[in-house]
Image 1 (cartoon, helix red, strand yellow):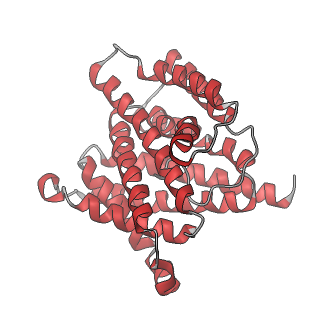
Image 2 (cartoon, rainbow, N blue to C red):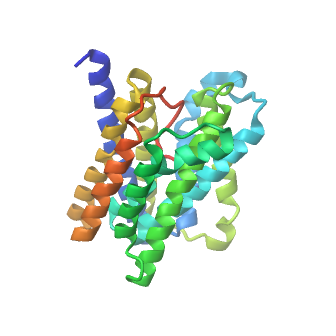
Length: 293
């Protein structure tokens, strides 16, 4: 294995672990903190953590002629975050993480509609297999609230795909650092709007969970960006799904979560279908991971 591939694998595995820890913190916070408050702190803490780096970029970092594109990217990303965080609060950790990781199934078709890019031949069979897996996880007709949360989690995957296509739409002129900056800034502002109606002051454990959300999610975002900068997406992509394994282990250790046979089969189908979408070689994406919507 070349040094670049080895470094890419290490970065990707580290990113997957960080994202699983971030998801764990979201689930932990959801027990005492309303979802909209968690979304706000996820964006705001990320913005604060990036502040020294952002300041060093100066005016060149924030100057843009594509503000509308940043709005679209942030809007879809924020919708995905709300859905993802809701799923994390109501589903087993591994299942909630996986549902947002379905982004590769939907991205080719959104790119076709939005950018006119024809999907590869593998896109349709992969999507059909993935949807079958999602059905096994969602279990239509099962427990009402759980089934609804699973549907919302799947919707977050569609929104994440739209956010990633939004990134591709503006990445010809916008560097990754600027896209990340505007995403965090716009998400912080937009998610602050409902706070007067839903605010609930966190207790000490809640504050610790929230700090973990911002720290681990931001770390995962940069580690995966680094991974894609040293190796191709077709190589890095499979490693990102180890986040589901890490999440499953954390969910079992902290909350005693164990997926049933149908969910395990659904998880296998979804991961397999997403890996199929990575068969055609393509250029690395410009910025962060799919689940860091």
